[in-house]
Image (cartoon, rainbow, N blue to C red; front, side, top):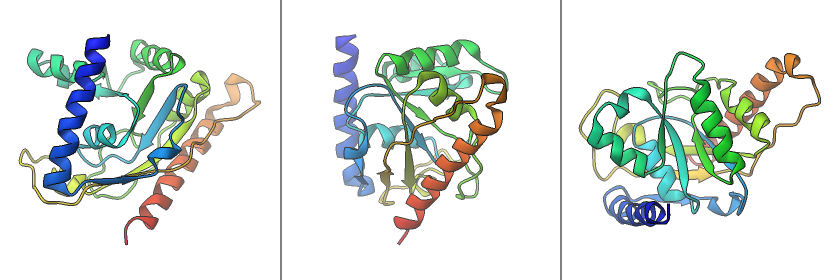
Length: 211
């Protein structure tokens, strides 16, 4: 585990230098991330570059769910697993991955979640799904709304070619907490409302940082 952590930090350092040089990378609000305890980083999703820029911007070691297909190549699978990725089978209730995520949060891990569920093809921030709220409720951990800018230009959906010298940035907001006294069978609307609140805060970050 210690060697894995050292490798993660080493990769993050190299990536920071690379992205600072070739993408003028910057970030703000990292001090708003909780110093201890589990934490969910909920971000807009534009590109396959998003987990990388979030990992560079965060002072905490991040984990993230990736679609099952990315783990079929054994070499690439080993690489992303070393960077704390774990597979999620989309389109079904992947209870094993969900339990893994909740356990990681309860053990003071920091988890990347994309509330929209998939990459935005238009660049607009789409409606959030209830999954992030469920994880926040079951783990009792805070959610930090986060806005990523520029990755859709640097590596657009469907493209295999990265465009260099595109300014990239990450912006964190203050933590949000899911609070509800409703019984479990009546939480569906509360989950969606909390997800909507998260998306609204990400949209606010976009407005502030789009000038």
